[in-house]
Structure formats: structure tokens, C-alpha cells
Image 1: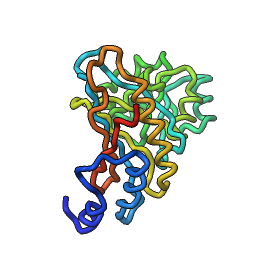
Image 2 (image 1 turned 90 degrees about the horizontal axis):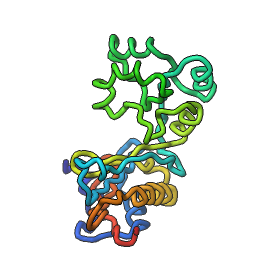
Image 3 (image 1 turned 120 degrees about the vertical axis):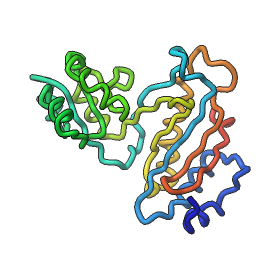
Length: 229
């Protein structure tokens, strides 16, 4: 992709340079030239092997300034828990009826799935469709929980899940370009802090291999991770 705006943005960046986090965040805001409010993404390559269970890096964090995205929540719960989810602002609440809707209508108008533990047997039937989309509820991400109201509120507030892909890279949104450097910087610090804290005990050698931030349509900016801990 070498559109005119991309080339203009690329001129602002020294590809050989490792930028301090604050510089990188300020630059990434300048490179956002698309007509829409671009998402700022963080890509962190880790020196672990995600094929080993004891080297998984996975968790969730509520970003201090949210993601700037409206999050639609689907909650699988019954009785009091279903009521609590609705009162907390869940967009959709149900049980077997929602499984039916997803399987028969190929319905995916939601961004986060939350469930009470007793509903996991019901949701199990959706593993093949929710799994590949990264939507399967998970206790580590706080999306399998008895406290569905809290989970809904956190999802709406900008909770994101971070986990390694097959190439040992974590990709996460850390806000919108319109947030400005200060708010994106706070989100960046919060997410990097969580990733550093999540370092597996069995990880050997250099933990953070590279750290890049970029807008949806813009070039990547390398961050000097040596100063991050």
C-alpha cells in the first residue's frame, strides 16, 4: 500500500530509529491522515514460544481511556444473572435462543461474549464459529464469570484482551487518533505494563523483541522497548 497519504506519513518517520514511547505516540497521531478516525494499534513481538502452554501470554485490561469503540455485548445467562446483565447495559442477553440465532442466522452483531460458568456447556456448541473469531468466553479474560454485570461494564469501558498469535505477536487497539498523544500514551503504558507483568516464568532470554505502533492506514513506528522495562 503506497497511497499518497501513506507516503506523506512515511516521510515523518525515520525507519531506522527506535523512538521513545512518548515520541512514537506523538508521531502516530500526526500520521493519521485518513478521512475517518483511525484506530491506533500496538504490535508487540515477544521472545516466547506460544506453542508451549507454559509460555502463553494472555490476559485482559481496562484501558484508562477506553478504545473509542462502541462495544456490543452478548451475555449468556439465565434468571437473576440475565436480569443483572440487562441492567448493566448488555446489548443482548439469552441462552439457548442465542445459540439458535447464531447457528441458524449466522448472526454476529456483537463484539464481546460474556457467560456465566453454567452456560459454557450450551456455548460449547458454538466453539467452531466463535473460536476462530476470538469471541469464545474465557475465564482468563474475565468473560466467564458469575459477576456478569461487572464484565459488561468493563467491556463497555474499554476492556481489551491481549494474547499471542501463532507468530508470537500481540496485536491490540490502544485508542483512536483523535484521542491525542496524552490519552494514547496512557493507554500504551497501561497495556505494555500488563504485558511485561504477564511474562511467563519459563520465558528465557529477551522478552520483548520489538514494539511497533501504527494507525489503521499508516506506517509503523518502532518504539524503544529497552526503556519500558
